[in-house]
Length: 173
Image 1 (cartoon, rainbow, N blue to C red):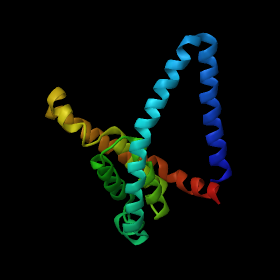
Image 2: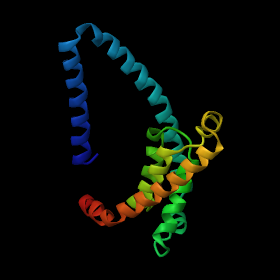
Image 3: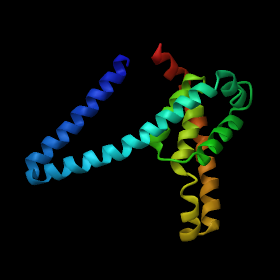
């Protein structure tokens, strides 16, 4: 862990502890319930995260840098690369926190931040698990419209991020 990651974790821990202190001050009888719910949520997320980490390990073994550069060719039109990242994001199942280990592997293998943001944006806005329910409750027309909007937003997220990629990478050096 680098210094910034440690600072981020410390800030998160302080916010959580501060929230419990505030809860204790305002509603002391709710603290035990909040702790129980927090532990249950942590266990639910932890199991999914372990599965995602195992999946990311497999991705790390089988995805090489050349494949990333072939799929997201830096010499090709960026819009095309964002469209590919968006499409992959749309078909990736799971909650967003479960794909962060995979995103880390993609980043390690050479995917740039603009590509990753297109992917994450699309994955967050739309996932294959929601499609059947969306068709039943909202109809096919709504699904098609939302898919079009998701593609536009995913591509736009990459376009808006591209000017910042050099700055983000420079901060890491």
